[in-house]
Amino acid sequence: MGRSNDGGMDVVVALVRSSFLVNAVYAESAREYGITAQQGQLLCVLMPRPYGMSDLGAVLGLAKSSLTGLVDRTAQRGFLRRVPDPDDARAVRIELTPAGRGVVESFYDETCRRIEELPGGLDAREREQLAALLTRVVEDNHVPVVFSER
Image 1 (cartoon, rainbow, N blue to C red):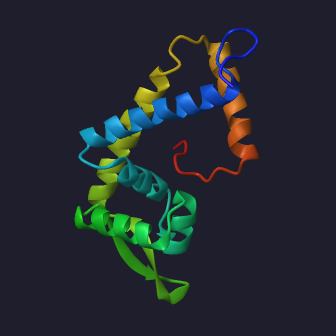
Image 2 (cartoon, rainbow, N blue to C red):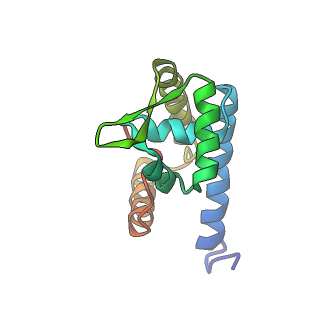
């Protein structure tokens, strides 16, 4: 591991380092919005629709206790709320509040803008190739939708 035959990084190093790069941008953007990176992920997941707790835990890869704490802290900020699940009287769904929707839409747009700048040294064809290859990696590994196109 380390270098490929052409002198560049091998795929493991390149993927790990690029994940650190994206995570750093995500965390910096979240800080500027007064939220944690995990709260940013949670809010982004909830953008398209409410989720039940078990589905939300599966998407975010969090244990029930960790998810409950994250939801509680984010709800205390007024960004989301628990509502009765229409399909199961014993369960709740987590949904964005108007304040949460406002924060997440701005956060999402700013984070997208910053991440869009990362491959700035690539031309249009290279960017399309990168997107196609990363799409295959994501789809082949069944990565849950934690950040999607609007």
